[in-house]
Image (cartoon, rainbow, N blue to C red; front, side, top):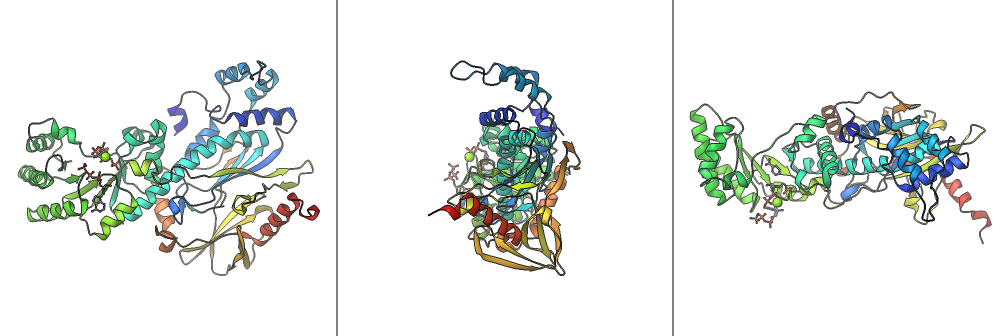
Length: 494
Ligand SMILES: Nc1ncnc2c1ncn2[C@@H]1O[C@H](COP(=O)(O)OP(=O)(O)OP(=O)(O)O)[C@@H](O)[C@H]1O
Ligand SMILES: O=P(O)(O)OC[C@H]1O[C@H](OP(=O)(O)OP(=O)(O)O)[C@H](O)[C@@H]1O
Ligand SMILES: O=C(O)c1cccnc1
Ligand SMILES: [Mg+2]
């Protein structure tokens, strides 16, 4: 689909932090640019204080990597760039090196719509150090936002318990690209449609909507406005009933619904956008049923999120369709996911992979060194645990012990007899060539729904969700501990 290319005509190689380019230059200068490395992209905490996360953004990343190159205008800009002292930042030979740079990495990634958890590498990039490094910022930009919004959408649609959720966020989203990416991610997370027409065109998402108060206000009366709308869209009428007086609005909708029926047409429903949504939706349901409009749907909107929808469900509101904008597309209660991209290993001249670790006072911030795989163990259709393992050392065994990366006293024994196992990282690129067949957006959305069924509802509740076990395979745990002690120079400390 070439999303990024459609959106931006020029190359996106400069969509990165300046320090990636200065490091790239220094790698080149020191002869390390082509040394093989592995980087992992992962997050440390599920967003929204939730118990799970929905991965999204891979399709954009595929486009980004396929189009990865510095074009003439980029190179010209870099060639002219000067330091504060007036010296050119990059030497001409480096600019020529960038001109010839051809994406050649291997990428393995969790498919979009997959339920993921903290510490799991969602994307693993293996390739020349310089390329892996240059990808850090754009990969994080793409995955952090789309994963966050897909997760928010998943929570909102779970709260709606199977009712349709329409994404109405374009007017409040964080700019143009924020809006488009949010509409895409919202659909992956479970929304049924978007009001964003360009997202419909670019991504093939169903487009849907009702009408605004301005439509009503432009006429002398609400009744006149409803009749005129019914003339224009006799098969698609959802009347917004709260411009003046909600109960009177419902009466007017029923009156126009009856005249549509006389013409053999059926009004689809009404929308309520203010006031006590439980109270008015229940009144509306009674009035519509009484008048013989049992199939008319009640759409509700107005600053909704998963908490308000849950509350309205508890209150037994008669709402069939939920229109959700601002709080979904801006991830209102948590504006960023916080995924990171860390160097995990480098290949020595001998051909041996050397694991790398970043030491921190906070154990949650110590990365997991080495080139990993992730296996998900599944029993009778329910996911039991995810195990991160050193992929070179992996041999299939009958039992494993997995250890919580942040608390060695939390361990779980897994007897693999009778368990299914799924390797979560799928091959996406090999030596710069895409080998992955991308599923369409509808397929991704369906996969997300199916994937969620693997997980117990205890992990999906909003309040104090049960923590899903993700652990390091024993050997990996051991290697990490020894490496951290070595890097801290523990033996020599007083
Ligand atoms: N029964 C309900 N239970 C819980 N929350 C509700 C209920 N009804 C509406 N809400 C939520 O309460 C908030 C009401 O917003 P607000 O105070 O701005 O009132 P309003 O109805 O939008 O007023 P206005 O008439 O000015 O548009 C919204 O977020 C809405 O989703
Ligand atoms: O509330 P959201 O979840 O963002 O959903 C989108 C909102 O956008 C529209 O009105 P708008 O907010 O522009 O005007 P209003 O609040 O005055 O109705 C619509 O009627 C919803 O209320
Ligand atoms: O179609 C609608 O009802 C709609 C679209 C955008 C924002 N609010 C409502
Ligand atoms: Mg509003």
